[in-house]
Image 1: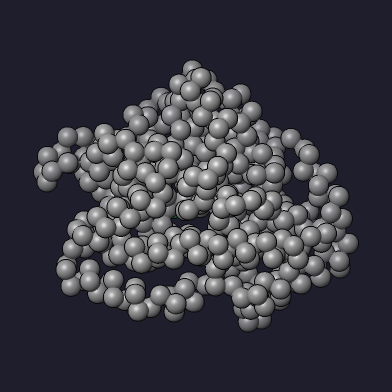
Image 2: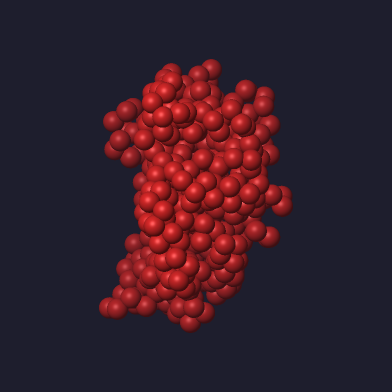
Length: 385
Ligand SMILES: Cc1ncc(COP(=O)(O)O)c(C=O)c1O
């Protein structure tokens, strides 16, 4: 079956950007500033301005962004860091890479974000930080977490790998000025042409520490003050990102429009579409539905040329890596565990056409009516945990 609705279409995006991107790449190649240099500085300034933070420090990828943010905040060996049980593996892996221990917290069944109540219950005397993840592109409301962090003297480090440009209470994520981490993996809402990442902050000392850590612990060439890493955002990636940043607001708007159209078309189908919050709160990096017949739905859509994904098939605490390290077993994060067997990510990208969205919605509705899916059953199972 030919692909009619791919999961994402980066070639279509390149076709739209070709002239500008080629020109930006040529500029870097001709300047020969491949590591550091003008393109990096320009992107860091533009991105800091975009999120409303004072500083942006480009790094090699989103995983390193979190690891270096933790190190810059002085978190390491013996410390515990709260992470949601439903996220990409890197959220927890970055904590382990900083020599700290991730503690897995169950998620809220409506937003799929870390549950505040469960986070509070997971705090021990060793807890030093919380990593809220703006999962799927939906901005998390951090008011409750901020109050909790203030009460228990914890650092908040935000994982914004999936939510570039999302806003909450009228403010872009990152504008809080604390440590906020981004991935520019090619498929992200703001994606490079290879790996890339960044940390934004408004703390001048933390920014200086991040710059030192990303570059062999060296603020000046050969002045190695601490053990760092080699994790720099290269000039070519920065140049591509500067071009794409100009289009990010319109791309996010397009995603929101597609999400509304798709959610409306799925209404009453028995598939539970994501909540569509108002304003710019969601940038729909992923459009995740729930169904009790996930595997059948996936295969039925594939047979009609529609690609899908699962984000994520295994909750973090149940991955082999963390089970081997003694993480709690099945039953410890019941909502995340239930979600992992019910969630399916449908195609979502700015270049999707109205015909593709309607074709996708029709295929999902057909599946639901063939399988007599009852919306109420899905809603009821949601109440668990
Ligand atoms: C939620 C989340 N955190 C962290 C990362 C890690 O980013 P990277 O792949 O750039 O290392 C990703 C990227 O996939 C992610 O989705």
